Structures are given as C-alpha cells and as structure tokens.
Length: 158
Image (cartoon, rainbow, N blue to C red; front, side):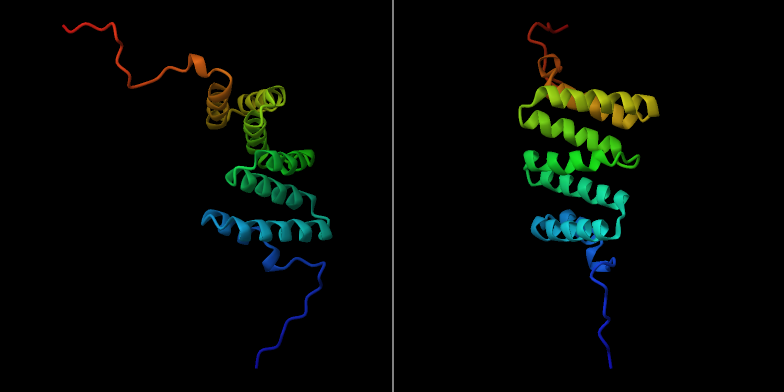
C-alpha cells in the first residue's frame, strides 16, 4: 500500500522545479510553463536561494519574450539582473536590450546592448558578441544592413 508523503510547504518539491516550466515552454504550453516557473520562484524565495530566484526570473522573462509580452518580460529580467548573476548574465542583457527596443525604449536598449556587447568582448565570447552585434543591426543600424541575394541593377553581362 502506498502512503502519502507529507511535505513542508516551505521545502523544495520536485513540482516546484523550474524543469517542469522549461519543459512546458519547450512544447509551447506557455500557460503551464508560467504556472510551474512561478511555483519554482516562490519555492526558491521561501528557501532563501537567491541564485535560483534569479534563474527563475530569467526563465520567466524568456517565457514572456516567447509569448510576445516584452514589457512584462523586462520586469522579470530586471529582477534577475539585480541579483548580479554570473551565469546567464549575457542572456539577460541580450533579452533586456531586445525587449526595450521592441517597446520603443531605445536609450534603455542601448544601455543594455552596450553593457552586454562589452561583457561578451571582455569574456572572449564570440558567439554572444555577434548575437549582440546582429541585435544592434536589427534595430539601430538596419539601413546599413546589406541585403544578400539581391543582384546589382548595374551589373553587365560579360
């Protein structure tokens, strides 16, 4: 016979794991993803685990980006950044820059872009460096973005 396991509501449970939320997000079940990520955040707050609270905020921000709610995403991403995490910092800066550009807050976007781009250069992270560069091209420098695949109208046949 199975017996129920009594748990302390302040203790971490597998059902408050951010993995559930991330798995739901992967299959685009955003409603359940949101629920489980909020559960994880609450559980981490109750246990005083600031790093995991920051991680949950990052994942909630990323979820709201996927749901196309950049204004809501910025609240969670800003909170994640306040914890000054080393892990995920460049992703947070990238998402914040993108969200602020999407909400027509270019000056804030440029602040996060500049910080993220410089951090990626300082850390030698070429992938993130180019991701930041392309993000800047998308919003700020799009008029100078060369369209590939178009033939020049002045070309002559040889």
